[in-house]
Structures are given as C-alpha cells and as structure tokens.
Image 1 (spheres, helix red, strand yellow):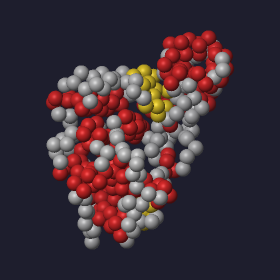
Image 2 (cartoon, rainbow, N blue to C red; image 1 turned 90 degrees about the horizontal axis):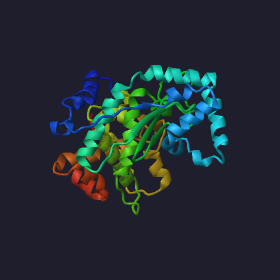
Image 3 (tube, helix red, strand yellow; image 1 turned 90 degrees about the vertical axis):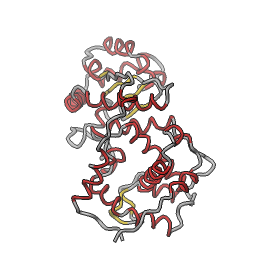
Image 4 (tube, rainbow, N blue to C red; image 1 turned 180 degrees about the vertical axis):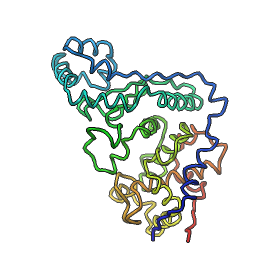
Length: 334
C-alpha cells in the first residue's frame, strides 16, 4: 500500500535541508561568466511593417534559421508574411505583454544560467556558453517551448507564464504543471545534459533507462545546486514528500514484479514516460516515478564513490556498475 504523508517535518526535510550550503565552491564561483538574455520578443512585437520584420530577420539570422526554421520556407516573402501577421495580431501581442510582465528583467534567470555555466565550464573546460534569447511563440506557432543547442538557447516565454496566463498550451494538466516560470531554467539544463549523458543503446531495459534519466537529473542538480528537487523533476511538494516516505515500497514494487530488466517498450514507458500518475504502484504515485528512482540510485552511487567526477559519471555507460556500486536498497517504512 502506498501511504500518503502529511507531516510538515518531512516536507521541511525533503525541500529544506537539501538546499542548505548550496552555494558554489569558490573555485567555481570565480570562473568569469556573464549571461545576458536577449529579449527578441520586444523588437518583434514592435514591428509595424513587413520591412520591420525583414530587418528583424536580418539582425538575427542564426535565430531565424535555427529557431524559426527560415530555410523551410520557399521564399523570403513566404517567411515574412506570416511573421508579420503574427507580430501585428492583437491577441498575440497581449500574450507577449503578459510574458514580458511576468518575467521582468530576468536577472534571476541570468544568475541561474551563469552559475550553471560556471559549473559546466569547471567540469568541461572546452565548454563555450551559448547565446540565450527569449521569444513569444504564439504557443508553438512560431517556435517551441525550448530550443537548446551548443551555441543557442531560446526560451518560449509564453509557455512558461504559468496558471495565470491568458492563453495556455493545449496539454493535459499534469503536463501544464511543467510550464511555470521557476521550472524554465531546470528544463533547459535537462535538455543540455543530453550533450554529455552517454548511454549504451544495446541494452535498453527499464533499469538502464531509469539510471540514464537519473544521470540527467543528477546533472541538473549539480549545475543548479540551489534548485529544489521538486522544480527539477516537476513534482508537487506533496508528491515529493510521498515518494521520499514511500521509497522502500516503490522500490519493492520494481523488485517483486521483476520489472528491472524488462525490455518491453510498453512496460518501460509506464514508469519512465509522461503520465499523470503510476496506478500500478498507487493512484497517488506520480508519473515518471522510475526516473525519480533512477535519480536516487545515481545519488547513492556518487555518495559511495566521491572520487567519481561529474564528467566521469556522465560518460559511464555501464548501468549495472552504477546500480551495483550504489548498493541501493531502501527499506520499507511502517
């Protein structure tokens, strides 16, 4: 049985103690790094003519190609005309104003990104920080919620306004929970982890997938050490308290059902993929619970192997080694 916990003390444990002493070490904090987020939605929605749109494109060629996919259009006019229609659309302009008001000057996001890039630079000296830009997409009309590449990160701000947004993405409620301002930078770092996270594609069972996702979440926590776990994995505070309290019972489900080495895509997706909950364990168990367990396995592995660096962890493709050396075996709580 999956028990829900309503004790404030555990909430404090789950979200408070993990953030104490989260400041960057001095050798990382002194790495020169400055992030200036360029707000491209401002000049775009200030455009009044097609010539203004053409000038905007000319001023931002890499953004136009990579994010707006200019080369997919047969002619310049075929690209400019719909952009002009959107830039002068009153409804979209209203959404853009709300996005600008919600995110303000974005100094908090700039600091989060600068610190994350410092950690990455420290661990990967060849890392070159990407340009960071924002845009208002019309909820997918002009671009995606996030674009993360080696040299460019773009945030589609209108996705992340949150519950107060005039218009929200067409998605289930459990997906919409991810689209909140404070979850935007962690989501970008999760995508950025793909650059470093090595896996063995020859053995794609549930445990391998759990640990692969666990490495990704560990990466995000490493580069954003002050970010609460709940924002990284997008669980509510109650869900975080519950999974911590029921960790032993959750693990017992995977062991007793002999699921860990199951390669059936349907089974793997039940525990790794997007779902509102995991009723196989309990109706209140959150979705992606296998990814959360994988994160705890990786944490135990790193706790037991303090000599292993972040790059070494991310390069490790032997999921069995990580699992066995973690000695992960949480006990059931009464």
